[in-house]
Length: 314
Image (tube, rainbow, N blue to C red; front, side, top):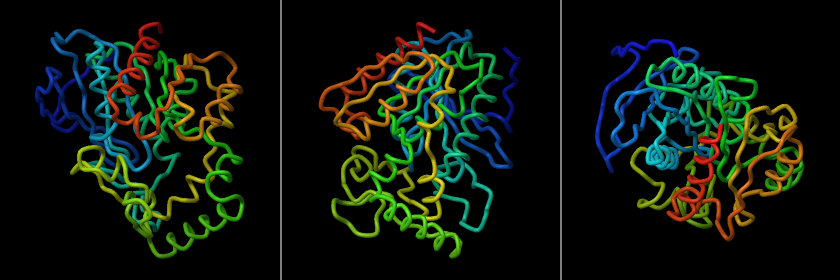
């Protein structure tokens, strides 16, 4: 590994001990922006080079939500967990301002680039051995795209992955007419310099991205103080035109997937696996919803056990 010097510019120290896991905040750069992240060290870690897992979360999320939970799960299993906020979200700097404001835009290409920048940074840490990737929900596709062909990545795990193609996008968003309508929403938002709406709200709320209550809306779950709870309508075109299933045939990292038929678009997982050039380790849980994978203890534990065993084998 490359030697790594702890400098004020590159690493902001902020160690705390919680559940006997030590955390350390850090920063890194991508395309002129500063991104903020956290390292989670295993209990009793002695400074020796240890395998690390870069954990990324669902759309609109910040690192304090499901990424931090899974990073702690990885640390409890002897790995260094790594989380960060994508550009335009949480504590990280803005996306390049293309007229839409530079924040709260679900831009798959930008988030994929951020993961690659995180890999570059983590690969330079003297305390890190092998690197693994763990993508949850929407960022599963970003993780696949960021790690494809990168020999620094030993293996990849996906939990509750949202893997879509054009057919699934249309099935979820009201057919071709529904997709076209949202594309027009994006065009209008871009023309206005961005158009922010709440990301989460109570069931049935109007003008909200996710009017379903549950994880993002509940203070004792995902509605943590750090959560922005914002969505920029200018991002719809990037999201709806993003089809990670189409890239499955070229994915070349050892892969494990944990999902459930009760969670989001399981057909996307099956389509992705069917197109892989090799085999994937699959673990299908019963009656586990998408939000359950974010914080339900038994679901999280089983998912974490599965991907950690996969990482240990590679």
